[in-house]
Picture (cartoon, helix red, strand yellow):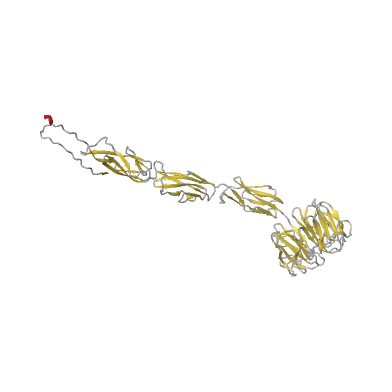
Length: 626
């Protein structure tokens, strides 16, 4: 406390030494006047730690004799009212952080004390006391107000942030909280002795579910494929350990285990659905259990379920494609991932599942389409983006995925249909909008996407069916409403969209099946209710919609499989339960509905694949890959 210096007060006294007052009386004694000479303040200094906090000051005024002057008036003043103000009662109130001097005055006497205001953190107010995250990597800002004891914000104070478990959630120096892993953590904000906490819960919510495959294609019964499901939150983070349930739309086609293992059961399509917390994903399943067989001149090519290609029979020109020129009497494996194959007279065209076309065998006319006339004993790639292929005697017709038709090889009779009779060693484009094609010995039959049938090439026996016997080097339209066609050596079998079967061309052995041996230059109807047809060299094999197999034409080698060598001019029934058939030059390959492969006819070169070179008059079962 400071006390200002006091101005001495001159006291005048009149001493009377027995003198008489006027009138002869005694002089009276004068009263003492109190003069404030000091002020004592209590307390001597003040420190306030909260804005709005108040402290009461007392001022004790003393006179010249040191006596307390009760009731002496005191006035109060602050050197900076923006920091601390003082009421007339001496109550000091903190306004803002800083220091101010409080002065108490009475008359000319005053005293001062220093007031220090410095807010101290008493508590912390967080913007949220609970944060819930549904995604990993998600962020949420926490803001903190540091308060003094009276709840006023303390500005500019240092604040520290921490997490009880940084494996669950982290917090940076600005209070930004980030979810790391599922679980619970506590975020703490600290300033001095004050702290506050917010609880954090990270529980990922399922936002999407993705399967390892969206399409499964099985080519054999009993095959398996495991689907895995990746469950993610909205931020794309994987939710580990999330429960996934699996279901199939048709257990008769494909089943699925609780672990996502899909098993093919039978031909057809099904949908596999994986579900997690009401979020689902699906994969389509196609099961196509087939064994395709294509009979050539003296060899046979077979596609086993699973896409493995096998070959048997004559191989002098490398037509099997096994890298040798050795005749085989049981099927040998050639390639994998094969979707289709067509066996010509002495060459083979193979279509892989990736749309690439491969060729092997005789190539004297460029029928392999590899740009040379060199025979091949292992397949060479010819083209890409191929949809189907048909190998004739010495030429090949190729249908690309865009519907364009291409031809390569022998063209002496205009069988390529490019308007010339020039042989080609590389494929040339012939037509567009083509749906299917069949190459015969020296003629080609084409079905366009609109169902119209066109023919080109050798036509001496009326194989083109255009009403003439004139060879054509460009395709001519033959008929309409055609679904498929099969070209033989000199005849053509036409299947219309209504299931009726029609025939034209060479009929010397009754191969047209119209009850005569008369050649036809326009198609004649043979049967109804037909599902598919295959024309051999001089015989024809027919599968009806009811699964019965019928044969007609030349049968000297047992091509029909009816137990005789008798030629037929009207179809005779051979088998039931047949799914597909392929007529070679002098033999026939049959696929039953149960998936079995059977063979009949000429077998001098092992083309039946039954392990012998003995021709068969009735079908024998052929084992592939066992």
